[in-house]
Amino acid sequence: MTFYSFGTLMHLDPTSLRLFLSVLEEGTIARAAEREFIAAAAVSKRISELEESLKTKLLTRTNKGVTPTTAGLALSSLARRALHGLEDVAIQMSEYSSGARGIVRVVANISVITQFLPDDIKRFHAKYPNVQIQLEEKVSTLIIKAVQENSADVGIFSNCYAGDNLQVLPYKKDRLTLIVPAGHPLLKKKKLKFEEALNYDFIGLHQGSNINHIVAHAADNIQRNMNIKIQVTGFDTLCFMVDAALGIGVLPVTIARMYSKIFDIRLIPIEEDWSTRSIDICMRSKESLPTAARLFVEHLTMEQ
Image (cartoon, rainbow, N blue to C red; front, side, top):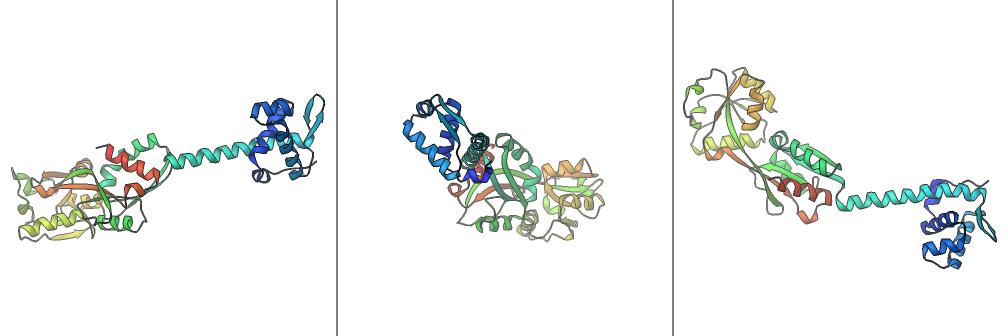
């Protein structure tokens, strides 16, 4: 008996395999030809070429029609698997071209990841469950650099100039607030001016933090210094330090409210224009994005 591997069949002409299966299912070459809208002589020629290629007889021809040989029966099972495999390839490739399947490389800052992306990605995955989001945290300046260098498809950043070679779309806005430990003297103020907060030590975020930059710039505008007593790498650590009365800090309102349920800290609104931040999406160009990445950007901008 001659044995054929699935891999061997994948190299054969799929049309010949389909015609072979049609002949088996119809029982005669003539009926298979009618079904496939092809001349009977052409079907017979294809079967002969298939037998020659595989170096074995596949069909026994009689006056009543055709019957498969032992090799023909083995081929029928393998041929169906091979053709189904090709159909799966076509389906998956069409999903990539339509954006239903793919990988989207996203870089975003911690504020965006914490406040907005979880819900937006959840809704996106409800529409496109076979698209993988590769999400990496970076500070805003490095986000822009990653998109410019094509190590990311999409960047989401805060209050930063993206340069002239990137396309930028609006995404969200958030607002910064002051956080202080319970019992802090600033809580006695009915309405706080930010310059009053500058009389106290600050817990700052890591170097390159957009929040640090905004607060320092606000202090410079009123010709005051901001004294950063401790610099930390995350929102939770900042709240630990504020809870321990080691200083005060600035966080986005949404995040500060979340941590106020865990730590004994209080929020004091900053009623100044600079406390509102614009959060934007950048890419090299929307037209040049892979389909899945373009659909992701459209999803984020439509959510507004």
